[in-house]
Length: 129
Ligand SMILES: [Zn+2]
Ligand SMILES: [Zn+2]
Image 1 (spheres, rainbow, N blue to C red):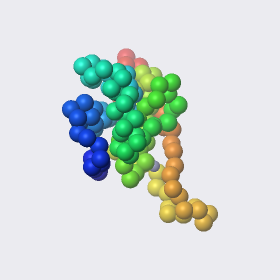
Image 2: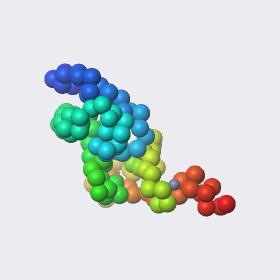
Image 3: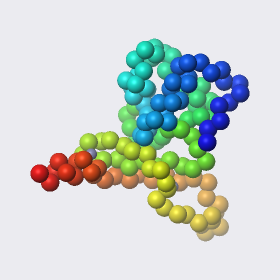
Image 4: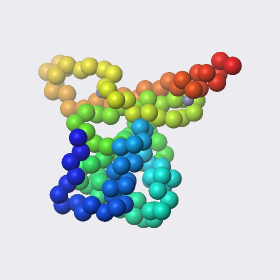
């Protein structure tokens, strides 16, 4: 899905961080990246994120208006996340849950956003007992 841009040099930090984006199934903040890679200086993390955004590998995820900026891998499809209102965990959905026709009222749809909130399985179990 994401082709490594030719003009972007493959450094070990960049490769490791892109891998983390692929592994974590939720929108990722700089704190998340730092937790996963304490060996990478925070200034480098910010530079890599800027480079990834500039080259279209990732984009800002503005769902749920988090205090800290979160990023997701860019793809042809819009990413949606679902957020647990109890533990605040977010998870990226593999598929878009709504199906928009190509056009609505003559508009060609370019993108849409969703905010989905719920209670995750783990929290449902905790609340039952
Ligand atoms: Zn939860
Ligand atoms: Zn969608």
